[in-house]
Image 1 (cartoon, rainbow, N blue to C red):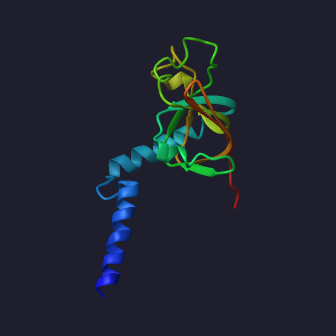
Image 2 (image 1 turned 135 degrees about the vertical axis):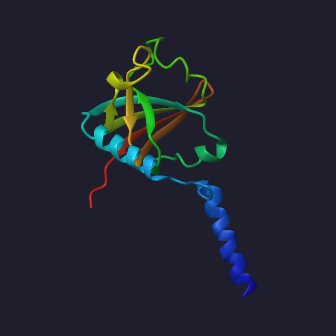
Length: 154
Protein backbone atom coordinates (compact mmCIF):
# COMPACT_ATOMS: atom_id res chain seq x y z
CA UNK A 1 0.00 0.00 0.00
CA UNK A 2 2.87 2.36 0.75
CA UNK A 3 4.31 2.09 -2.77
CA UNK A 4 0.88 2.75 -4.31
CA UNK A 5 0.48 5.92 -2.22
CA UNK A 6 4.00 7.01 -3.11
CA UNK A 7 3.23 6.43 -6.79
CA UNK A 8 0.04 8.53 -6.59
CA UNK A 9 1.87 11.30 -4.72
CA UNK A 10 4.71 11.35 -7.26
CA UNK A 11 2.30 11.53 -10.21
CA UNK A 12 0.31 14.38 -8.66
CA UNK A 13 3.51 16.24 -7.81
CA UNK A 14 4.82 15.85 -11.37
CA UNK A 15 1.49 16.97 -12.85
CA UNK A 16 1.36 20.06 -10.64
CA UNK A 17 5.00 20.84 -11.33
CA UNK A 18 4.45 20.54 -15.09
CA UNK A 19 1.27 22.60 -15.23
CA UNK A 20 1.70 24.87 -12.20
CA UNK A 21 -1.94 24.02 -11.58
CA UNK A 22 -1.90 23.43 -7.84
CA UNK A 23 -2.80 27.02 -6.91
CA UNK A 24 -4.84 28.12 -9.92
CA UNK A 25 -8.22 29.54 -9.04
CA UNK A 26 -10.66 31.04 -11.51
CA UNK A 27 -13.56 32.98 -10.09
CA UNK A 28 -16.85 33.60 -11.90
CA UNK A 29 -15.77 37.06 -13.10
CA UNK A 30 -12.61 35.74 -14.74
CA UNK A 31 -14.53 32.93 -16.42
CA UNK A 32 -17.13 35.40 -17.71
CA UNK A 33 -14.47 37.79 -19.02
CA UNK A 34 -12.71 34.92 -20.79
CA UNK A 35 -15.99 33.72 -22.33
CA UNK A 36 -16.85 37.14 -23.79
CA UNK A 37 -13.27 37.82 -24.88
CA UNK A 38 -13.12 34.61 -26.91
CA UNK A 39 -16.66 35.16 -28.22
CA UNK A 40 -15.76 38.68 -29.39
CA UNK A 41 -12.49 37.54 -30.94
CA UNK A 42 -14.44 35.00 -32.99
CA UNK A 43 -16.00 37.93 -34.89
CA UNK A 44 -12.62 39.23 -36.08
CA UNK A 45 -11.46 37.96 -39.47
CA UNK A 46 -8.79 35.29 -39.71
CA UNK A 47 -5.32 36.21 -40.85
CA UNK A 48 -4.04 33.73 -43.42
CA UNK A 49 -0.35 34.10 -44.01
CA UNK A 50 3.07 34.50 -42.46
CA UNK A 51 3.53 35.88 -38.96
CA UNK A 52 6.55 36.12 -36.68
CA UNK A 53 6.84 35.53 -32.94
CA UNK A 54 9.95 35.96 -30.79
CA UNK A 55 10.27 34.03 -27.54
CA UNK A 56 12.91 32.86 -25.09
CA UNK A 57 13.01 29.06 -24.84
CA UNK A 58 15.15 26.90 -22.57
CA UNK A 59 17.23 24.08 -24.05
CA UNK A 60 14.70 21.64 -22.59
CA UNK A 61 11.76 23.41 -24.27
CA UNK A 62 13.61 23.63 -27.59
CA UNK A 63 13.72 19.83 -27.72
CA UNK A 64 9.90 19.82 -28.12
CA UNK A 65 10.18 21.76 -31.40
CA UNK A 66 11.46 19.04 -33.74
CA UNK A 67 10.32 18.73 -37.38
CA UNK A 68 7.16 16.63 -37.61
CA UNK A 69 6.03 17.38 -34.04
CA UNK A 70 2.55 18.77 -33.44
CA UNK A 71 2.28 21.17 -30.51
CA UNK A 72 -0.63 22.95 -28.87
CA UNK A 73 -0.15 26.33 -27.20
CA UNK A 74 -2.56 26.55 -24.28
CA UNK A 75 -2.41 30.33 -23.82
CA UNK A 76 -3.20 33.38 -25.95
CA UNK A 77 -0.14 33.98 -28.13
CA UNK A 78 0.77 37.21 -29.85
CA UNK A 79 2.61 37.44 -33.16
CA UNK A 80 3.23 40.05 -35.82
CA UNK A 81 2.62 40.33 -39.56
CA UNK A 82 5.66 42.58 -39.90
CA UNK A 83 8.61 41.53 -41.90
CA UNK A 84 12.17 41.27 -40.81
CA UNK A 85 13.33 44.05 -43.18
CA UNK A 86 11.32 46.75 -41.40
CA UNK A 87 13.45 47.95 -38.45
CA UNK A 88 10.40 49.45 -36.72
CA UNK A 89 8.72 46.08 -36.20
CA UNK A 90 9.30 43.97 -33.11
CA UNK A 91 12.23 45.92 -31.71
CA UNK A 92 11.19 44.90 -28.18
CA UNK A 93 11.55 41.17 -28.76
CA UNK A 94 14.49 40.61 -31.10
CA UNK A 95 16.92 39.86 -28.25
CA UNK A 96 15.04 36.63 -27.46
CA UNK A 97 16.73 33.37 -28.48
CA UNK A 98 13.98 31.89 -30.66
CA UNK A 99 12.07 33.18 -33.67
CA UNK A 100 8.93 31.39 -34.84
CA UNK A 101 7.92 31.88 -38.46
CA UNK A 102 4.34 30.67 -38.59
CA UNK A 103 1.85 30.21 -41.41
CA UNK A 104 -1.38 31.31 -39.69
CA UNK A 105 -4.83 29.92 -40.47
CA UNK A 106 -6.98 31.25 -37.63
CA UNK A 107 -4.90 33.95 -35.98
CA UNK A 108 -6.93 37.14 -35.48
CA UNK A 109 -5.60 40.43 -36.78
CA UNK A 110 -6.09 42.74 -33.78
CA UNK A 111 -4.17 45.83 -34.91
CA UNK A 112 -7.23 48.04 -34.47
CA UNK A 113 -7.57 46.91 -30.84
CA UNK A 114 -3.92 46.63 -29.81
CA UNK A 115 -2.05 49.01 -27.51
CA UNK A 116 1.00 48.51 -29.75
CA UNK A 117 -0.69 49.37 -33.08
CA UNK A 118 1.93 52.03 -33.91
CA UNK A 119 4.79 49.56 -33.54
CA UNK A 120 3.39 46.28 -34.76
CA UNK A 121 0.63 44.66 -36.80
CA UNK A 122 -0.44 42.15 -34.17
CA UNK A 123 -2.02 38.76 -34.84
CA UNK A 124 -3.41 36.87 -31.85
CA UNK A 125 -3.70 33.09 -31.62
CA UNK A 126 -6.46 31.84 -29.33
CA UNK A 127 -5.79 29.29 -26.58
CA UNK A 128 -5.36 25.71 -27.81
CA UNK A 129 -3.99 26.72 -31.22
CA UNK A 130 -2.13 23.78 -32.76
CA UNK A 131 1.01 23.90 -34.90
CA UNK A 132 3.08 21.50 -37.00
CA UNK A 133 6.85 22.05 -36.81
CA UNK A 134 8.10 22.00 -40.41
CA UNK A 135 11.77 22.96 -40.15
CA UNK A 136 14.30 24.28 -37.64
CA UNK A 137 17.64 26.01 -38.05
CA UNK A 138 20.13 28.10 -36.08
CA UNK A 139 21.17 31.39 -37.65
CA UNK A 140 23.29 34.05 -35.95
CA UNK A 141 22.95 32.20 -32.61
CA UNK A 142 19.14 32.38 -32.83
CA UNK A 143 16.85 29.37 -33.18
CA UNK A 144 14.48 29.76 -36.12
CA UNK A 145 11.48 27.45 -36.11
CA UNK A 146 9.15 27.24 -39.13
CA UNK A 147 5.62 26.10 -38.29
CA UNK A 148 2.19 25.80 -39.88
CA UNK A 149 -0.98 26.19 -37.90
CA UNK A 150 -3.14 23.10 -38.27
CA UNK A 151 -6.81 22.52 -37.49
CA UNK A 152 -8.20 19.22 -36.32
CA UNK A 153 -11.66 18.12 -37.36
CA UNK A 154 -13.60 15.51 -35.48
